[in-house]
Length: 74
Image (tube, rainbow, N blue to C red; front, side, top):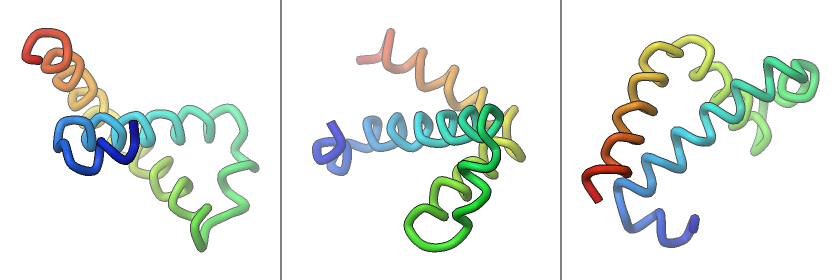
């Protein structure tokens, strides 16, 4: 799914939203797993978790809009 998501904007947004939500959820369950890697490639997941925590109403609204477009627009 990921290589084809690079060429389709809607799929790319879905992947990014899923990564943000997953990282924020995993950080709520296992904070030490995400917090120990703040730099490098693994730091990307820490940054995604921070976005999910700080912008959670906006991320939730984006997930609802994306669900609506996937279910009814496609």
